[in-house]
Length: 412
Image (cartoon, rainbow, N blue to C red; front, side, top):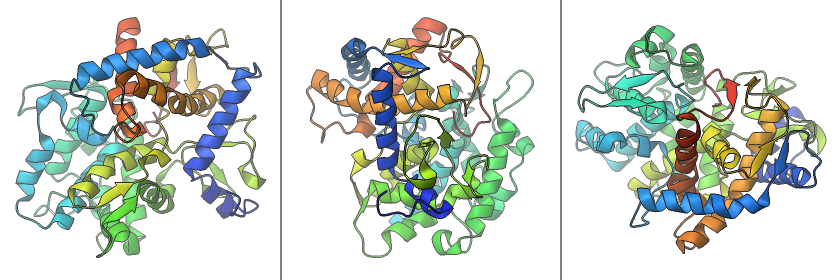
């Protein structure tokens, strides 16, 4: 951040896109809470070791051989024991590795943007397997089938892609039909999800240099890899996503008209220039980055520097810390009221989640006797913290998150 001119809106936005800014500010808020200076949370460090043991226990139950994959959208495409990535491979046929990667990136990017909290009432009935999926798995399976059916392509003869014209044609009605939404199967934030995809289409169309003449998300493969590179940095993937897709996010978070995306005001956050008072997260963009690691690797491109990315500040990881007793909400109505995404209480909860995941990860590695190379943060999340948060939520509240948040489907 020191090299960026934070006195301009563009410079401040660029500074707030770095994961170093996310980590520095999150850890500063954690230090403030540990000093007892937060109005929103108390920290109980004595509960961290037990939280790590819970995560380790869940990890062993899910991956007994401790061969833990990345926390990515591709895990949801495996829901119910179905190899949908393999199904896509079969449908694509004998195509070059780069073409396969473009299709996989098309699918993953659109699917991740649709992956915000579905609500407890929604589910997707998969015809082929006969199984019903809910929450993130349901959204993943539903978006997979919408993709292979050509919902996001403008060319019926080329259904296995997403392109600008196809995305701009997505309506809430068409998306709702693909996701089996009805009066008895409501999906939270349906309008917001469809609007996000339309904005995505507009942004892709405006950047042919990054996304090609058709405006395909998979154009990122060519933009990042070119013809020579066999290795890329994980943060470079995130940076490319933030630099090219920032305009798709709701515009309420902006400095002088420059969109900040998943970045929210908090009165205690320090920082230089116009970045002061802003707490960045870029959760969906980081979740997307995690979800693009495998398409690059499957195409023979190594992805380095995984731990430059942060933990994901969403309600499963954050819920784990609440339910394990590491975080104690201080407002007396914290668990009974409905919060807004931009409320400082929620912003701080997410920041503390990022910082505490950094502290939890080495404890989990210690429990599992794995090195950081064997268990990077991307695998701790998968093993892991996200699943343990779900287990505790199921045990305590039948699966409901610990906090009620009014979401438009673009953050949680």
